[in-house]
Structure formats: C-alpha cells, structure tokens
Length: 390
Image (cartoon, rainbow, N blue to C red; front, side, top):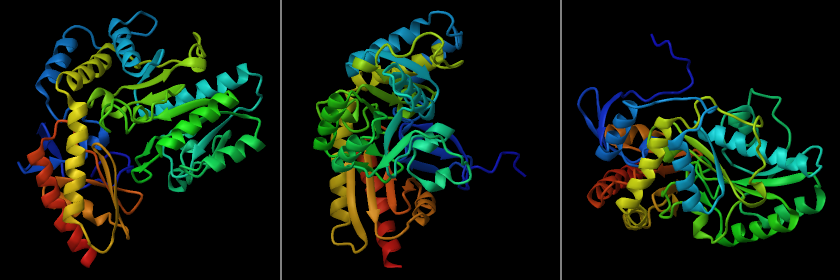
C-alpha cells in the first residue's frame, strides 16, 4: 500500500537511471524519452558536464539564506538578463511560484498607479499553475473545480483574439496587465500569432499595462530560440521561467524590465529556497551547455525533422487534425480523446503525453539526436494509425 496522497494516476513503471534521451526502468527495460519530465530535462539525463557541476557545488554549498548575498544567484540573474534584455530577476522554485510573483508584481504595480482593484487579463485554456492564484488565472474548470472561492481579479478572454482585448480595454479601467503563454502547453500546443503578440505589445504600451509572458514550458531553448517571444521581435515587461531552466533541479524565475522593473522592494516578496546556490549552478550550467553545444539551432532543426517526419508518416490519415508547434514543442491533434496512446507508447518503449484530451504532446530533451527522433516517429505513427482505425 502506498502512503502517497492520491494526486496522480501513475503509470505502472519506475525508472532507475537515465542517459541522454533514454531511461531504464527497474526491470532493465529501455525507453526513449520524448517528454523530458514535461519539458524539464533540457539536457536529457545524466549529462556529464551538468552532473559534474552539481557534484562540485554540493561539496561547497547547497543553501544559504537570501538575507545574504548569493554569488551564484547574481551570476544566473546576469546571464538571464543578458539573454533576454530584461533588467532584474527574482528566483523561486517552480513555475507556479514564478507566476505568483508575476501576479503579485502586477497588483503592486497597479496599486502604485492608484488602481484600487487591479485586474489581469488571462486566456481561455491557459495553464499557470495549481496554487490558488495561479489556478484562478488558469482557464481550465477541471483544475479549478472544488477549490472555490477562486481568487478574484482575472478577466478571461479567448486565446489569440485581439478584438476581445480591445473590448476589455474599452470597458474595464481596472486592468493593469495581460498574462499569456506564447505557446499554450497544457492547452494543447497552441501558438500565438506573431502579429497578435506584436499588437498586444502596442496595446499594453498605449494603456500602460504590463505584458507578462509565461514561458515556463516554452522557454529555455525549446522553440529554437532562447525564449518563444524572441520569434516576434518584442520585449515583455515580465517573463516567468521554470521547468527546463534547471534541467531537473527545481528553479523558477520571474524577470522584469521597463516599467515593471523596480516594483518589488525589500519586504514585498521572498522565498526561503529560491535562488539557492545549487539551483543557480544548475540554471547557469544548463544555459552554458545550451550555448556551448549550439542546442538552439539543434532544437530548431530537429524539431523541423520530427514535424516533417510525422507529417509524411501521417499524411492522409483520417482523424489526424493538425500537427503544430515550434522547435521541440510539438502537438499532434486527433479528432477524438487519445489518452490510451500514453500506455500503448509506454509498452513500446516510448514516453509521450496527451494534453487537452486529444493532443499528443512531444517535448523531447534538447540533446536528442536525429536517429533517436526517427525512432520516435517510427514507434509513434503506427500506434496513431492503429488507434484511429479502431
């Protein structure tokens, strides 16, 4: 009998070790990992330079309080701000904590403008986390059900719909920010139009709103650029990161620039574990290896290879609605719920995920190579065809 709280319907497998894009279970069976811990294991498993950096740091210092200066934290903040043109960073431990920080920052920003009840525009089918504020911002009733009363102060609009934003602009004087994922992960790998983000940037400037981008799942090289917004030529006021930033070590970040910078002052926000030396070394090492090994260009080219391979193998298959995404963030939408494919793939030695009920989600580690990507295609496509025939 398990003593764990029953929060996950767990698959019947336990992994013992990993190497690169591969995992081995306790029975010795090998699996190709096309999920990367849900966009977490950026460098795959047991990357030699990553594990060496962590081992070295563990022998020196794992944690010290944020009441002291933390050199590794300063270095990671400088690195992230250099890659993004943002100005300052707050470190926490997860994506929902990073989004909590962004929500608090937006509210404080609004109060400083004299707005009594600051509101944030959020999207349908969004996912921002499972804390009370972030699940209130999330556009999924399944996530929210049973946890009412929800946190107030969110205005929901359809994704990718500028007219809806303009309508809120006309009717709501309490809005202080827009919080949006450039690519909705849990919402089914749905991507914002480039023009939408560019126009949203202009509207936020005109209204003095903060443009806040949740890049928890799509950031850290996954789309072929460091961050998904960099495909559009804009700069957000606030950006949240986590998942892939630490390659498996928990670390989150909330970055601010422009009119959002300087909003938090001592006493406004904090985190006991956030920005500890071990987590920051994990973040710094991840970013350095992505740079040294040119993994941005690799994510772009391998993503195209997988996309084309899937399209060729599934061409003309009735029930395949769309293959979409960017870089190594790929969704295959089917015309019916397909959660059964997760177990079927597992039995064939492939780790995938299904989100939004009918979208197969692929989030391979950035170190996956082309021969492994071909294996992914060769295992998955026959399973999809068989599933759709039944």
